[in-house]
Amino acid sequence: MPMIAPKGVAISTRQHGWLIATSLLIALACNLLPWQVDLLWLRPDFLLLVTLYWAIYQPNDIGIGSAWWLGLMEDMADGAHLGQHALAYAVAVYAITFFQRRLYNFPPWQQILPIMATLLIEQLMTVVIATFVGDSRQVLLYFSAVLTGTLCWIPIWYLLRIQHGPARPRQQ
Image (cartoon, rainbow, N blue to C red):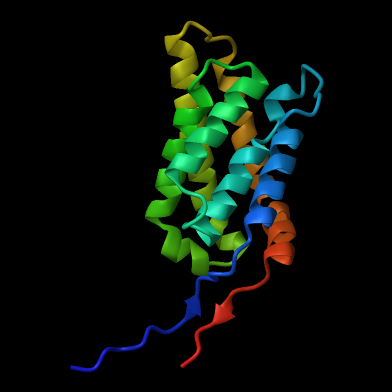
């Protein structure tokens, strides 16, 4: 029985370790930029957005374990409860990897709703953990970052796509 060759776009297997590490460090630095106290609630989670991009386009390099460690780095850098962002990032990347093959083939404007749902899941996890440890001040303001993160998805997607390069068609 002959094997049927897969059609469509192949996931690039080129090594982009330096690009992934650099983009994640820049995203962590963007998360640490000083914001006014009134605008802090609008700050998108740049590190999570970049992590989601790499989880979609380089799933062999960035997965749930990487998301956990990046979340721990965010916890330490942000002064949050240790494990708060780590658990939320791991759950968010798990949700994205579940639909990774479909999202890989979508243009960025069609990825907005799954990204928004993933950001909402991450914020819900963060709020639940913060509430359990007794930090329940202005909980509803946390969800403002979901909207701003969703609006930042397309520019981040294009910036990383320019560096990462387009997907290559399969060779027959």
